[in-house]
Length: 152
Image (cartoon, rainbow, N blue to C red; front, side, top):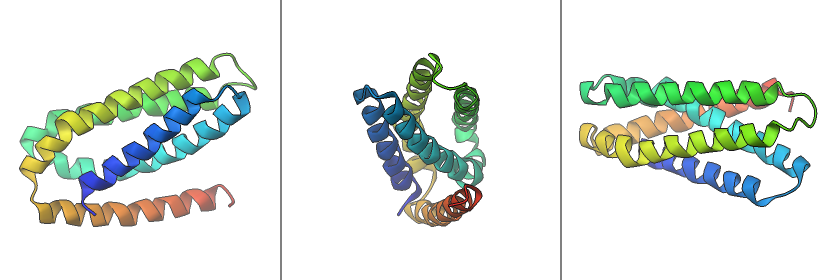
């Protein structure tokens, strides 16, 4: 699978979880869905930051948009930490989660609308396939280490 296709599939999965989060009124269900999309986003940002973005940064015309993507990841990481540090059934959980969702949705729009078309112009199909294979392998490895770290 090519790198862009892999990332778009991740985006679709996360957007589906966001819709589930928005659709439920149950606080406990919102927390479960939050944990699911947090794991998905952590894996996704990991493969972008370790494989995809470094390759993009090597192309001068992709450097700025790549650096912006890295900064957007940082904002999401900060929001995850803030949400995870909330105590009990804090009234801040849902509003912070919604801000996080808005940030991620904006990031997805920029990647799919601006970044990916530029990536297609700067990388061959073969390069995208090779990058996708590396990303798939790294994704599996990262998920395995996350599960092991969680004692599962």
